[in-house]
Length: 397
Image (cartoon, rainbow, N blue to C red):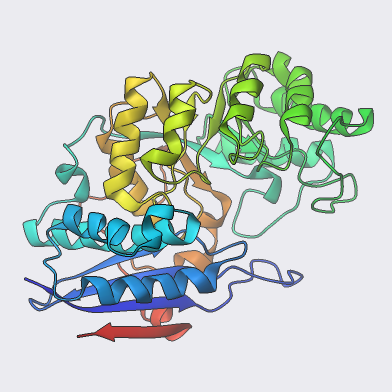
């Protein structure tokens, strides 16, 4: 068996709100073989800046792997890293391109062997996965509902809990009192009114959901070390499950410094790539929950190694999921197979038709629990819309 075609798919802009200036553009990968089996993957760079570079990176890697046996995913991964010169420099685009291709290779491998991917990763460590409702400040439903008032934050959390979730994640500092994203400067010492706003929102959520529902605070690295420590002191009494991306991951020493000052478990990883990137955070034990993104960390091959390395340091793992149902399915397989799983992220966008319609299967949690797909490979495939509403480039021999 050999790879005969790689298709890079750059989905046209998806706007979840008509008022948005810019939407998101998922980057998908399809790998075809000479035996008619194909696999699907995803690069986790649909949002932010750099999508065009990732789309091009997939095309560049495609030329490198044509003619290779897709079952040799480890050899292909190493080739992408070391035979590209820039691969060993790492970074989002490099590892993003590798991730999308690697994910598609695992999909092929599962289909050829007629087993779900989790079986290839060691089988089940659990029957189902605990799930949290992620980004409830955006609302919890099929349409965006930006939270501004304390009662908005409380109400959206209650909707998730009523559906069976026993954990919610929220960024209470993303929107100011007027609903403006990024309306407050969050670096350095925070003014009292910003701290008070965030704490009042957390207090409203805690009162609404009660003592037995976990609250996760998301910072998106909009805070820095100083402001993250300052805000942590205000919210520590509300029994926070973990505190995420409290500062930039570019200087691991600052994460260690923050860890020493904050009495809440810390999580990070969606902007840390490969086992080499995670190594200093593990060695300093400065994070408690590792959150590699399968679309940027190096794919399934690398994510499994990151999770295994985390296990050595008593660090649990949660795959970061903020992509299409392709990324969702892949995450469920990995999290089912690893022994040090923490909790699964169910992002608000996973509820929205604009994303669901890209794929054939609509996997959703039941009463706040997920099961891994049982179909061969990832158990997911693209719809015609994904190919039709996209820029598509095919690379062949």
